[in-house]
Length: 276
Image (cartoon, rainbow, N blue to C red; front, side):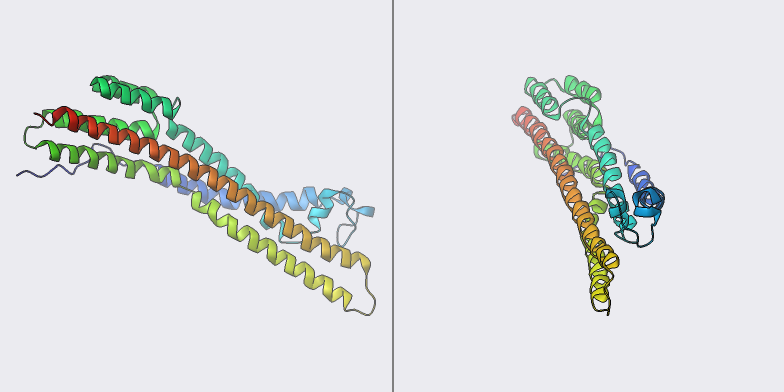
């Protein structure tokens, strides 16, 4: 008895290398931009009383954030990374979804399958585009191949279609998950860096209090450093968690659409050929 074919009808894509290059360039760029903002915008003398930046008294929110110390630009770079990677993921996942609603596309494909119009379903995939359509199109292509293959029985043909859909999914899905690891990592390191800044600020504050004569300006600056780093660390982590959950939810929705349509393709083929 012949075995089911194992060669997929899809081709390996190269988005992974492009996404890695994007991450490699984005991370140092965000750090550089954060340092520039810290030094030349937040650290402008106009934000401090008397124009004294070093240990000066801030007069607005910009000066207050600058008083958070040397860890502020690092945490700021985390926030910039979350924003940049989130925009990039929105674009990539949006393209993967296709030109129209995924739910509408799935219903159309299921309607064509029910009517036995595989060519119309394939044409709809060409119109939809995106990762979901690519996977479904691969399954439909294998469907047509199996209809003309006389060397396999129905169960083997069904298995071949299902396997091809799974292989196509395995090729498309990693592209959607690129850079999500970075966003997830920022959840932890944002909090930890903010906590480190808090500890440094409190150490300075207690050191000032332990002196014979307490300088209220320095004490205030140390407390500001602690609180600013705490606030920025929490902001980074909160934003990272929200964006990570948004993207995983979108990816889960696309995966479910692929699974649902793939199941319909397999079941339609099995039902239409079980008596042949």
